Amino acid sequence: MSFLLFLLLSSFDLESVKSEPNLERRAELALQNANDAIDRAKQYEADSQYDKLHQAVIEVQQSVELCQESLEATGKDPRRNTKQFKKVEMRIHLLTRRVRGFEDEVSIEDKPVVHKVAERLDEINDEIVSGIFSKKKKAPQP
Image (cartoon, rainbow, N blue to C red; front, side):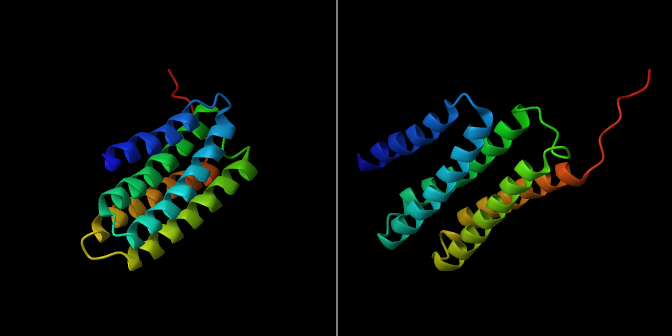
């Protein structure tokens, strides 16, 4: 019963972030939620609540993906808004470091879940950096 309650509460947090109409604010809240989810995961690991730990780690990934989607939905060019995108990139990098550190702390059974999330965060971070430094794509000529 408490596991279901946790799922409802954690998804409610992420759902409330998704309902934020301001896309830039939604991206910020999503990163904040990811940071909170890492803290919860560490607490669940200390309390030996491994199902909740897995859900919290997955919520980290979902939150960072929501942040990325929200930034893309703004329609802003990362090359022209480097300050905003660089700030997000740096925060995702810090989140990735926290997840990698947490990966070292968890039991061998929990490492694959945490590792998969860390890898996905790296991918998202690389995509954001590529957007900042890549050249603008030219429209195809008819």
